[in-house]
Image 1: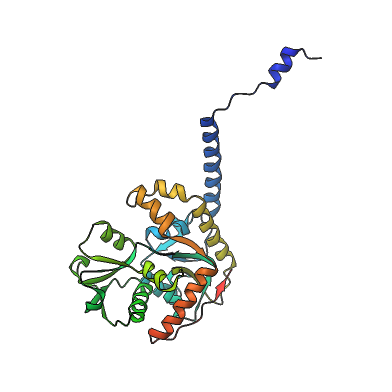
Image 2: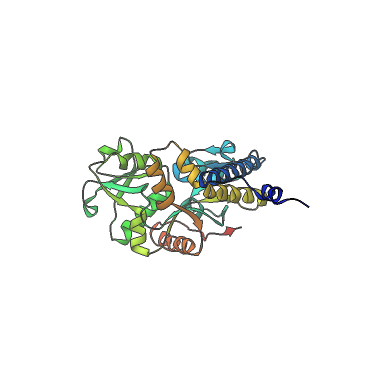
Length: 293
């Protein structure tokens, strides 16, 4: 039989401080994250996937960045249309104007209100704008602006931007160039299209989705894209801390507040309303979206 002192020794455990516990949890989380990253590496082959080189898309390609073709939205649309890609993170309008693609369900780049990186910058009142210069990178932002203006009874000529945006009376900007412009405190007034859409519809707006080539075997590809998104959102704090785009405070607000990445019932209602308004104002054939899990 063990004496009391021996029993006491057996029951003793190293004292764990709060800092020790935090360090251990952090170590375990980093190890788990590394394992997820390793499992995603080189997982896309033989599929070819494209995404945009903007900060707002970073969480959707977590762990598969080295396998992604990065290009502006309009270039990605051309590559997907020509069959050079099996999937691409496309402006929602590119999908709605084509019957060749399915939309990967549950994933989107969307906003409920102000999006910050899609806006019309103008130096005269909206009603007096004669011409709007636009960044031709995104078809969605152009058509969203047309819809918003048309619903206000306004029709304005639009043309691709040729010079510096600062010189324009009215200019439509998206993505990182829009962020750069806005953070430079321009003389222009900013009409945030996400906020304008929410004010008009009380619905989220979906800017981009994973467009998948229709009638192809893509079950594995869809699974990988879902896993990459889950990994990105689970490690969003890590991305905010370790990215070098802009400053940490901005990254936290932008990725954690202005943008969200789910495609649920409200977002689909927003897409349905955009479809209705595109049919009303675009003068083009608009296809109903088809979502695939």
